Length: 392
Image 1 (cartoon, rainbow, N blue to C red):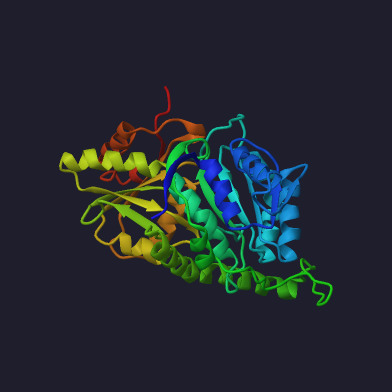
Image 2: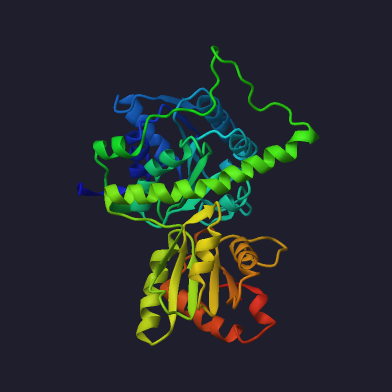
């Protein structure tokens, strides 16, 4: 085991990208991801990282540069947040369609308005269907490990897709946590040299991003969808390989004290830690409840979800974004759809909370659990989503 040090998570994320030996960093500052690109700039300026650091004029340009550098075969990293992602949106979809293995750290933050710099998941939900691989991290160690892991998966010749690592703004980005850094020989063992599937090169000219006529567009989208779905096996294999090196084994869905529980609470991101404390307290009171943490968002872990739900009578889904005018939060809507055809599917109740960084405490999770028990017996109320903690 290598040495653990206390470090700001954003700094650790930048150093992990540096340890992966990135060739190009395309950067534009926006709170709360700025410390990541600032530290990468320092690493390049001090000669600690041999890379091209390209400060651009906007997030749209940041992803455009990332596409160009990745297309010529450079290991490429960028990051953004919130309104920056909204401006970048057009090119994120393009990067996935071109099958470019760009790694992006997304420091999750509310989309305006009203203007907010604090954390929720409204930004990532805006690019849910972009075609990128997307995971959520709970701790600083998760963030650090998955920065290196993301390159390993994205650059696999059978995958070749952009990879987005979601980390909660401020709740993770600006926290100092104990993190075990990788040894250089670990990275050499885990992350092979980049060998692009398709590469722009004058010796072998190809075209990227050409017009897709109606008679080929559907086939192109089906092929892209198939590639994302099939990346799941690579994701799982790489998690196993990373675990064998570091001793930390990750899964598409992870649980806490869920065995035999009649009710599960589902979280994504950093709320899993505080939710586990609520589970401990409820368990001490004799409640049959556990925690399910959804790590893999795209491709969606359908088989793992169905397996986890066996024997579960109620699922409480915590959403940190709003699907305006929809039947519930974006995560709950997907979970309901995924479980619709399963036998003995659980009653699903949905709570929207933690918007724009509002605290979700241990007591909040206990209140949500207790309220959900009564709602589960009410066929009308159980299908309605609730904004938890709204001031009267």
